[in-house]
Image 1 (cartoon, rainbow over the protein chains, first blue to last red):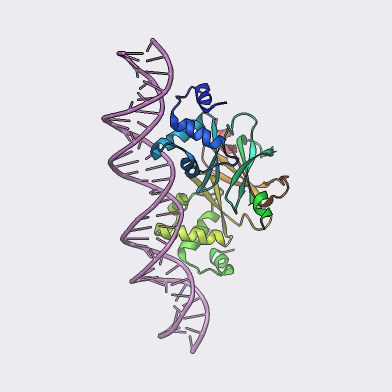
Image 2 (cartoon, helix red, strand yellow):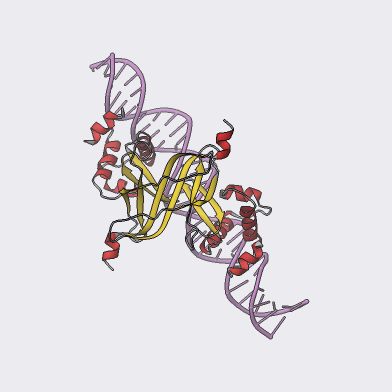
Length: 135
Length: 135
DNA sequence: TTTTAAATGCAACAGTGTTGCAAATATAAG
DNA sequence: CTTATATTTGCAACACTGTTGCATTTAAAA
């Protein structure tokens, strides 16, 4: 689906900033940081615009935010909370790349009585395929 | 064990700031934010001092940091990485409290060939026992 | 084409992560 | 107990982030 259609489907205005963000994320294998997305983007926008664009896209479920660590945030396409796509995320501490692992789903955890679960985040840290090969 | 002994055991100087932080965390059921720790602390220290104290305590494994979300960070006693205490963390989106769940361990995930795991983080969001009772 | 509701850019502010350096302090040595 | 030394602290400073209000611009509806 084209970025512009994705926006329309979510009743969002088709602005070049939003379309660009979606396009950049879509054309990468790994989840990207805001910095990386900005660099790959054609236009240049104010940081407030990015801030609000990311927020809007995330709220509507077009993208999801992956918080690895305090200052390590990545974005990938698709909703995370809604639906069944509750996959794990892998963070390579060598190349700092983050990948969604669709084959690894977050576990069903048994919590003490009285607790209600709304969301489960599973983040796996280590070294990736690619970095391990190079050794 | 007394905070001062904990520090000595890790070859760290016994300063009032470090001891205070350990004492405050130890006397609370839930994991605390830096703000909360500061408020419960007797002395008043520069934010740089806090910054470095937390870092030192974390590096030595006396405390561990729990990153729930970008601006939601909590601290609890004990090392997280080293040893077997790889427990999950629960975040209540009503009261914002974070609890270590020693009974819920992070799962052994099957990753594609070539990947090496060093650490696994499992964060569960929802509403806690206490908040659900009050409804 | 006009209207209007939403998005943008700019300025501004508080807060955070981080470093370098001089002054204070905890421990080790005598 | 006193002195020496290696650490820790407080302060200043800087860049960066999250966030808001407001005037201007722009996308979509009429």
